[in-house]
Image (spheres, rainbow, N blue to C red):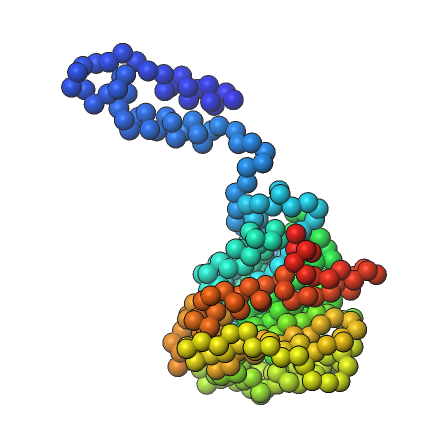
Amino acid sequence: MAAIGVTHAACAPTPRVGRKSFHTQGMSWFARWSCITTFLLLMPLPASAGFPVMETQGFDLDGVQRDYLVYTPGNAASFSGKRPLVLVIHGGGGTHRGTLRLTKRRFNRLADAHGFYVVYPNAIDRMWDFGEGKVSSEFSMRRDDLNYFRQLIAQVQERYPIDPDRVFASGMSRGGQASWFLACRLPGTIRAIAPFTMPLPAFLEDDCRDGPPVPVALFNGTADPIVPYDGGEVRIRGRDRGRVLSTDETLALWRKRNGCPQGEPHSVQIDKTDDGTAVERLEWPGCRGAPVVLYRIIDAGHTWPSGRQYLPERLVGAEPTRATRSGTLHRDTSLDSLRFKSTASSDRKSLTRKHLR
C-alpha cells in the first residue's frame, strides 16, 4: 500500500505550462501512461485472480546443482484438493526448455484445461544416465538420475499441492526410456506412463518383467528410422545405442505384468488423413491390474505427434501433423482418456477425466 501511495503522489497533476505544451495537466502522455501502468502493476490482485506460472526449481545432488521447470496452470485455485503431476521428460540431446518448444506447450494447455501440474526435468549435459545400457556405460562421469527423479518428485510434492497417487511420466525417445525406467524402478511412485517412440529397452527387460501393475499407453510410429518399431538396435548417426524389444514383445511383457488375459485387442482407428499417416488405438480388455494401450501411428517417424519437425524427415521420419491438427489424437492421448487405474489405494481410482479435476 505504501508503494501505491508513492505512485499516486508522483503521478499527481501539476499546473499547465503552456497551450502548445505536450503536457496535459503538467504531464506528458508518456509520463501519464507510465504512472497508470505502474499503478496497475502495484495494485493488489484479488485472491481469485490466477495466471499460469512457469518456475525454475532445483536442488543440490552429489555436489551438483540440478534443476527443472514447473508449470502451474492459471486456474489451479479453481480445482479443489491435491492435483495430479505429469513429468514430461526430454530425449537425448534435449533440454527441459527444448521440450516446451518441441511439444508446442501442448502439455501446458492440457494442464490449463484439467488443473494438473507439469514438470519438465533436465538432464546433465542433455543426456539421462540410467546406470546401465550402452549409453550410460560411455559416460566419463556418472550421475545418479534415479535419485534425481526421487528428489525432484519429493520436492515438488513438498512445495505444491500434489496428489501422490497421481504422479505420471511421459517422454519421447530417451525420455520414453526414462518413463519405462521410472515405472520399473519406482513403481510405488509413478502410477502410469506414456512413452513415445520407445518400446521397452532390452536392459530393463528383467527389471520390468515382475512388479505391481502400472498402466501403460505406448505411442509408436511404424516408420521410425531411429528406434525400430519391430525391435533391434537403436541407431543414431550410424552408431548403435542399445537394443529395444519390439513393440509386440513390449506389450506382451506388460500385459503379463498387468494381469491381462490372452486375446486380441480392441482396435479403433482414430484418424486418417491425407498426410500419409493414420492412427490406430489398441487396448487389451480384461486387465486385472491396469490397462495396456498402444497408439500405433502408421508411417510416422521418431517425432512427437502434433509437435515440431525438429530434424529433416530423411533423418527422423515423418511428423504426423495433419493427422493430429484437428486435435483428435492429442485429445485422445491426454490423461483424461487413457482410463488408467491407480493401484495405490484399495479403491483403485480410475484415471478418467473426473480424476484430473
